[in-house]
Length: 453
Image (cartoon, rainbow, N blue to C red; front, top):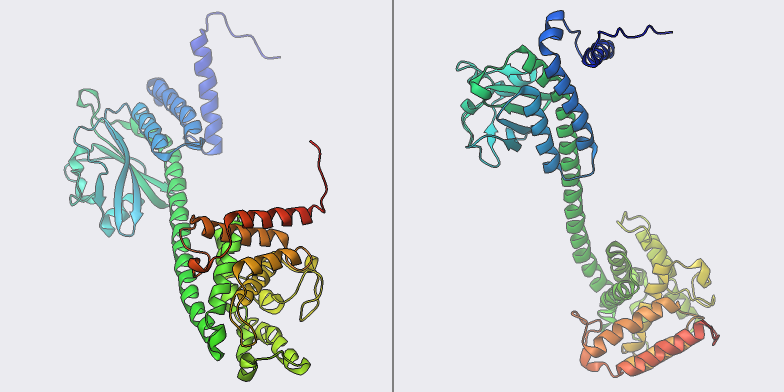
């Protein structure tokens, strides 16, 4: 059993005793240096305030808040630990080497941000410094340059902020009350606190670097997508060059498919993939005999088989290409599959066909029906939509058909900023008729069932 505390020992002394025991325990773990008797006697209150500052700073550093708010909290903690009237906190950037202020307090002439360019010798001096440094007239030039927008002479003491031997920032302290000098006890307290501040600044810098890299990657991807769009548009034009009656077909299918996907609420990346797949869906036709495209009558079985093989040939062509969109080979092969298994080349049914393939298949059919062919005149948009709704959901995905109807309706009422159809003047169907088709499609999907609420 522990002995009772003597009556003459005050609560403060008990607290001090606990604190000293804690200090030695922390020392064993490497958090604090062993305290000499003199330091215990003269600096206990300051160390206690420092630990209180660390205690208060912990939640500030780990809280989910904007970094400027955290930086201000760290400046306040540094002021308290070092008993300083002026403190500035800097982050370090090595390309080019410079210190940039992230928060300050007390300085009357501190610009925002304050920037201090550094030469290699300055960086080396800061990295090799062992703890905080009291500056003198002869040491300013060792650690700091005077080429920035803040005079180094404003600072009386600096504390390099390092993590794993790497410089991440600097704490700069100005005057104290009555212009007192920074003594060993203030430097010890400052050194302890700066370990935590350095970690916080490094985490912020890493987060900024990550955000910057992500942003750069997104911009790069956007430029790559732009490049792909331009290049694939050229491919689409080349694919359709065999016959004047299909000129622009692949470009339109890409645009229609992207519009349907957008109306269905797909993500922008998926919409871009649909557009590109539409551009390439008929790439296998480059291997089809040109005479088949101009034949004014129906193809015989052998000719049809040759034409149908464009899906297999196209799949072989694109399978060896690394596209940003992995489904392109599947779409090229299967865009003539139909929900009831009547399509080609594999006779797949709806459950075996991915949604992007269904959308491309619908867009392809819509453009083929509304375009002129050697053996027939183009169908009107209204007649085409009526026929597609009639064939859904057996052959065409009903959700994709609803997306098609929505885009055509937007054209009909003039709400599409970019027309879905190339020639809006040729749109011969009223919004009310489109609504009727949508209602009919919905009735077919639900098989006419009534639902009571």
